[in-house]
Image 1 (tube, rainbow over the protein chains, first blue to last red):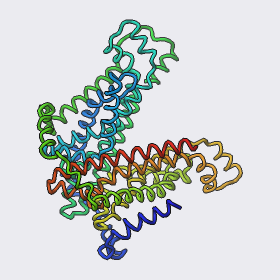
Image 2: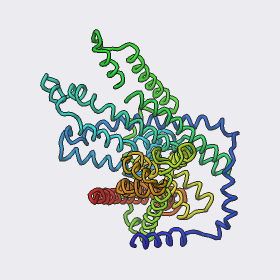
Image 3: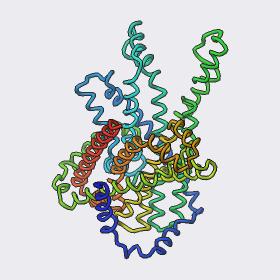
Image 4: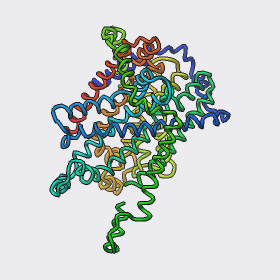
Amino acid sequence: MAVLVLVVWSVEATIIADTEWDRIGSVSQVIESTLRFFAVDWSILRSLVKPALETLMIACLGTLLGVITCIPVAWFGALNITPFKPITYPLARFMMTLSRSIHEIVWALIFVAGVGLGSFAGVLAIAMRSVGFIAKMASEAIEDIDKEQVEAIRAVGGNGVQVVRYAILPQVLPVVIGVIIFEWEINIRRSAVLGLVGAGGLGLAFFRQMNTFNYPGVTTVILAILALILLGEVLSYFSRRAVI
Amino acid sequence: MNAQTNSLSSQGAPREWRRFHFPRDFVRWGALLGVLVFLAWTTEYLGIPLERFVTMWPKLFGVFTNRYYPPDINYVLDHDYLASVVDTIQMAYLGMLFGVLAAIPLAWFAAFNMSPNRFVIYPAGRFVLMCARAVHETIWTILFVTILGFGMLAGVLALTVFCIGFAGKLFAEEIEAIDPGPVEAMRATGANQIQVMLYGVWPQVRVAFTGIAIYTWDVAFRAATVVGFFGAGGMGWYLKRNVYQIESERVAAILLSIIALVMVSEIVSAWARARVAKAK
């Protein structure tokens, strides 16, 4: 009952009160404006190759940077190896939440303001957005490791670095690489829209086609994004099979 | 890798222990090298200034302290802005509701074990879910805004499509993981597809679906904070206005309010999911 009231109230406020119905016009006009998108402008296809490559590259570099940044965060955020529990553990948890809770568009806005327009801001935004998820999964994997292997390395006189290299890393690496590939796939999706706020790639091409009211061109860009994502899915399928 | 160890053990122990295995390690290190070369080329191609990873920090810090500090807190406590927060919550709520309602049949179609028809309906369901998920929510927003004009209707529809993609995939995975026993029992007594779904599958996935729906709301709220940036109402609209007017102190305040709200929504959804899991 409460749910129903909430639905009615929300529908009232968002859909009925906030929409200018006479500007949308009749159903046929809506259909007509939708149909404008159902055409493909092949002539811009050649000019999309470079932005598509850029989008892919932003996703790759962003993921790499995110992985590098997540090493200390995952180290601080895993309860069993965190160096100083009262400070470093909450700090890392806070960073993970912060990174995951801010939308990539907002991150891109922050970095475009900080380092200027271009793909560098996009790379930083993607990296910041993906740190949280990778670090969270990695630190959970570290918390679940088999302790006896750590003790075995310690018992034969291994130091801290050797414990990490021979006891912790082999146990968490398969999980973490799976997570990284998954995140990379999502990052392609994200980097395809960062151009909307000035961070390069296919988003910028989309923005241009939209602003020149070239609706078939918009469809072409969306198809290009879909093709790129499909490529990412195929690549991630094969690389995941190769790793795991 | 597991397959390899298994095949080795089935043939007995290898004759001699070697640190490197010729074809396997060659391929592996070669792939790694290839990835590294690609990344280096990428850095070169995009013109990423590597030295700026060191030099950008003072500048970033300067930008934040000069322009974004102190955040204009009074701006976000303003009545209009708070009303837009309520709008955002309503949009996320409706988007989640419509999305989840539409995702349940789609998930049924796209779950391999339960799909009514494996050759037509299963690929169709998969395809719809993939399209909904592959296109980013901001692009959906822009498309709906172009067709329907500015306003929250476009936002609700964009969030609906986003939630269909997000919840549909998780729902389908959940249906694929059910225990087939009750389903077979139902089929044996002559139940039709819909009866199997209602009495054989639904009771098994009900709790998991509730949890996923709550999580979807959380994710939809995160997305709803920015759909307004592209003209679909809510807080994003304020964000866009102030970004373009270079009112940096207000932007800082809005960003802080978004972070705070998202954290609150995350805590609420974690609490609600824990309660649902306990009620099981």
